[in-house]
Amino acid sequence: MPTIERRKSHGKTVYYAKVRIKGQAQSATFHSLSEARKWAQRVEVGILEGKVSPATHTLSDLLDRYMAEVLPQKKASTIPTQRAQLLW
Image: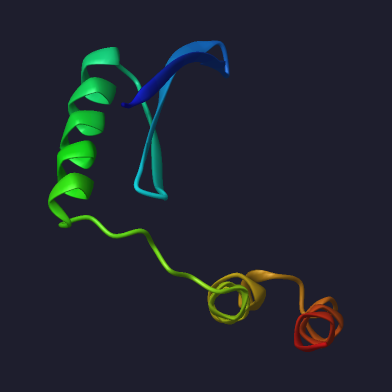
């Protein structure tokens, strides 16, 4: 059964939808309640039919992506320090 919560974000109302079935959890944020309900129903059916699988990202994947996409945009003086911290 999906859970939908109404939240305030930057002064606007958003809807946070969460579906948990068979040990799998998926969540997303929407600007309208109807979008949240449609998404939750689609994900719920997908999980029950075995079509939706949870994302399997590791910390190593995250750090590699950060070093490739974000780190090059930092100040040149901070890159060596941050790279050393990430590779530690």
